[in-house]
Structures are given as structure tokens and as C-alpha cells.
Length: 167
Image 1 (tube, rainbow, N blue to C red):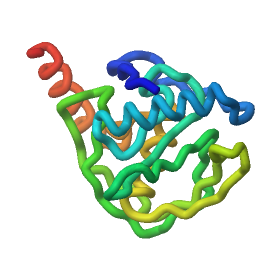
Image 2: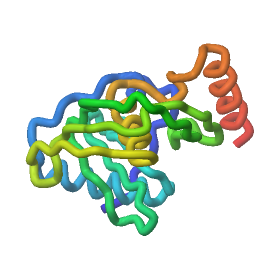
Image 3: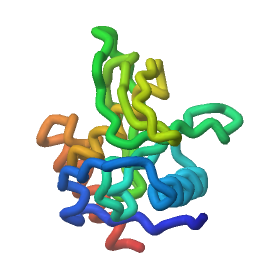
Image 4: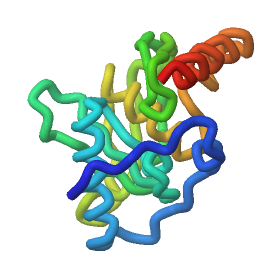
């Protein structure tokens, strides 16, 4: 297991739809292990393959207080989303130093291949639901700030660029 480097925005991989996973193999499990270690090192609540340059539909999510409860997902898709929304401040290690409050459905049902290679459907609520949706966005070539109005998005990216130049 190792902590992998993040792909910096505006790398085109962050705007590219990730390829489906054919099945869960030892190689996929090794990538997931690296993803969990990388997520925990941030620390963060989730990570998608493209964020570390792995262009496969792989994601990990762990919103537990104690950690060590990561849900490993291949080919995750949102089947149902609640009509009730919740706001949460979101950020990404791919665009460090900035964040924005994003409104997303409070609960979702997702279907994915789990660590055993079996199709699983699971309900996620609150922060877990937000993180799952955030990761699915990454797998679809979207960033959290794509949910912002154009002017807010432009300002956020400009602020991140300024911070990057100061480093």
C-alpha cells in the first residue's frame, strides 16, 4: 500500500469519464488499498480513481468517526436520490486551498461491485451520500465546483490559481 500523488487541476484526466471495471481482481484490490491509504492521509471522506490518475470507475468512501469503515466501489451508479437536499462544504485535493458549499440530495441508493466482486445496492445518508455523489461526479469527469454558477466557479478557480502561484 502506498499514498499516491494527486492529479492537479486542470489536468484533462479530471474532465474525462473513467472506464468501467470488468471485474474485481487482485490488481483492483491493490488500487483500492492505495486509494484508502491516500484518502486517510489527506484526510478526506472519499477518493475516486481519476483523482490519482487511475482512469477506472473505482471509488472509496469512509465517513465514519473511527475510520477503517471504507466502502470500496467499482462502477458505482446512483439509482435513487432523495428529494430532500443538504448543504455541505466540499473541496478536492486536486484543487487545494479552496472549497464551496454544494447542495446535493440528502440520501442516495447506489449500486456497485463490492470488494467480493458482487453487485451490491446500498443506501447512503448525510455525509456518506454527499461523498458517494462527489466520487461519482469525479468518475464522470466532473468536479464539485461544476455545481456552482459560472461566476462563482470562475472566482473559485481564480483563487486556487492564485494560491498555487504563491506556493
